[in-house]
Amino acid sequence: MLHSSVNRFTKHTSATIKFLIIPPMTFLAIDIGNTRLKWAMYDAPRPGAALLAHGAEFLEHIERLAEGPWSKLPAPRHMLGCVVAGETARRRVHDQMELMLGWELEPKWVVPSVQEAGVTNGYEHPLRLGADRWVAMIGARNHILQRGIERPLIVVMVGTAVTVDALDARGNFLGGLILPGHGIMLRALESGTAGLHVPTGSVTPFPQNTSDALTSGGTYAIAGAVERTYQHLYLHCSMEPACVMAGGAGWKMVPSMTRPFELVDNLIFEGLLVMAQQRWG
Image: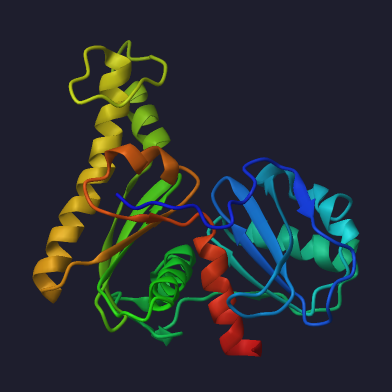
């Protein structure tokens, strides 16, 4: 089983600033998820650019950015973000940039399109595809193409929700699955089952207590969704797919996967860099 971690980003609310002299073509990437806002500043809007600074804040603490980690940064030249938490969170980020810091740049936010950066959107209504899924697919395809081989691809995002998306070797997005993440599964069972309030257990082949049964059930449900998508894509393309996994809870799936995969923690940022190059590179 192949798995690796690429540029692991902090899971806490602290930030890392690598140096103070920032090149003029700096690019700020922002990923606003359901729980946290993650950000990264690079020396240029292109894949392979040097990481200058990065950090994360829980959504309830967005207002700390201007007086905290962003106060140490010069205004970036360009900014591109991916948001799934809604318009309110995006507006709060704008306020930090414009009202608190006075940055004179036009924030850009990803809107899924019919085609971008080598990926064709096969969703029935392309604009209704989640921005995070779109960016992750673009990042994952670019990640695989760096090896020079076009392959079918499964992109798995494991977070509050789980998405399992399939692309053929030419970058056509064929469709994907959405299912609840570990936390939602457990909360749903607790709220719908009398007396079921147990701590998180371990993943085992044959659970012998309720905690392990719940944790194993959720983990195997996600692994099973990936396996079924793998089978469908293999039959459709007559070629073994590559599998890229990302998301804050991706590491929990490592021991339970049945197919080779690569764990890429900063996949959204990789996608944003590819899209930024299309705009400003």
